Length: 173
Length: 121
Image 1 (cartoon, chains in turn purple, red):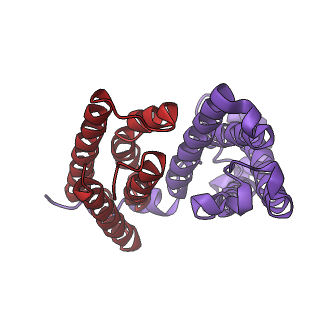
Image 2 (spheres, each protein chain N blue to C red):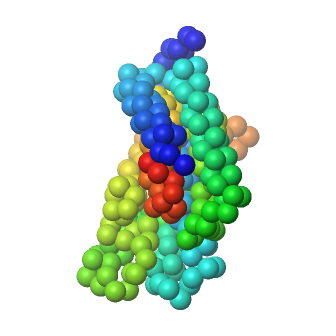
Image 3 (cartoon, rainbow over the protein chains, first blue to last red):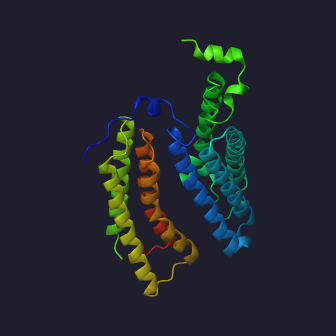
């Protein structure tokens, strides 16, 4: 029954990838929303598409955006993070746009989507999630810029890609 | 079907979430107590799913059967997924994942009631 002590310094203060540390929570929530939005859209489109076509297509779109965010945050490579910045931006614009649309023109939304009324049905999590996603990605972009030699994993020919002056600076105490 | 079990699940889920958030706040990792709590939540959810399936087999007619079946499949996965994903994390963010699972379990009881009102809360 012993509670483990807090993690060692390195993993506690310096997450090792976009899916660890705070990223662990982000991936969990994105995964949950990916599952919820896409399965909800799948059922709605399959069983009653004509009831609210706009809402269901938007639900499906939201589902795809959440899937992309979940996968790219889990992968965490430089390319994946770039894709994730784009999809989180689209997600944020989508929540604001669909939220505003659903408030101004409720007739187009006889059935709710994840993003209706700014995600009120989901405790406004859809509105804040992309903000935290983008903050997390910005943290990684900055970390890349401040410590460029940490990034290449072993066997990535990282040494030869480095100018001699850079190596010098790294090895100086 | 009385509301005792869904109400118990709501209370258990919220209590688990509060405990997990405290662990995160005090910089603790996933421990045996939290994993045990997720296990208890899992058992409660499985019993509930069993009761709902029995009700369906006994001739119940929810308005939206496909959605209900989706929930019955998805609900028992939540504590399991949170336990594995959270236990992989060696920092305070592991319990944070468990907190999400507790909250989601509580919220889904309300959703179940909306999908099929015979499931009281």
